[in-house]
Image (cartoon, rainbow, N blue to C red; front, side, top):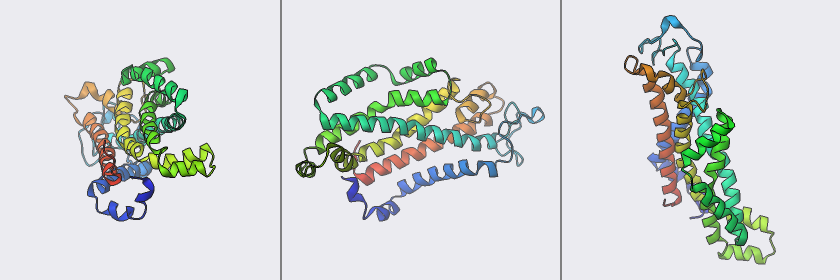
Length: 280
């Protein structure tokens, strides 16, 4: 199904799909919490208070305090900013690189397509997480290294999706007609073929955001991503692992935040796949 054919009935169809509405509500809620964190967080997320450490949930501290006396609720709110950034930027760069490469390879074919496929085969020959960790270890810990690693490893999935769609679409009547009218190759690729090939990739973006979010939290947990004392959910879980038996709340609430946000992306992706007629 073409993306262009979705425009007239799109609003009504979204309104009749509770799964899509629920997913967008979860994502919108996290975005609102992230934007309003400076206004609604009751405490400084990195300010330590040794006299208030390991306090259980209460009216003063709804999610309790951690081993440094920091308010867990405030840290979860501020952490939403970092983790949403990870989920979005972690898919934007692979999406752009993979979409461009897949479009060019699928349209031109020949040696261009052959070179791209061999590069993809090389990347896929290594386990995803191992290759990503190796790149981050070379570049050094930090979010910039994580984004570079995701771009270098994650683009191959988008390239394969777009390439497959372009190979099918370039033989369709509308593409042949555009070529016979003398339109440039760039116009045919990016104005006629690509908009009709994006449906599968847009659905995959939402599913990929779940993987990126979990990878970002895992990398931070291992000490290769966001560095303490910055409030990030993976960092919070890592710092609290030695206190699980005596202060369960330190790991519970950031863990629930990760699961809930991932669930929002997953719901939205499944609903978009149904809406666009994409079958994974």
